[in-house]
Length: 115
Image 1 (cartoon, rainbow, N blue to C red):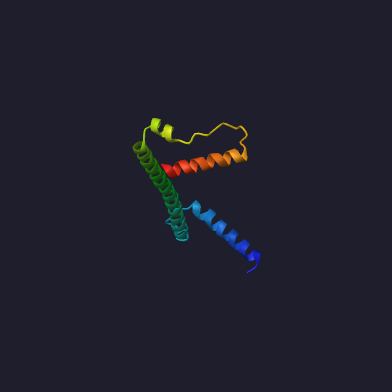
Image 2: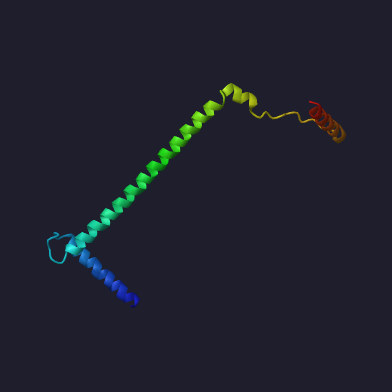
């Protein structure tokens, strides 16, 4: 089939749809058009509803997981305790001599072995 054949078949289908859309379903040649239209609309609505239902269920699952995380975090410690054990940065930016740093590290290692 050439491109013209596809184009003319599309035009015939369009004219058929245009004619049958203004006629009732009882018209002998238009029953298939109406049945196909109803099936198409039903399938489209079903897909939209399934998409919405999937999104609702996913949001609900995320909310439940968030609530569970909140409860588990509350079990760990209160905010004051969490603040105490949280990482605190050291803002001392003075220059450290390499030998001095090595000596401090040795002392910490020795102190750790003694304890």
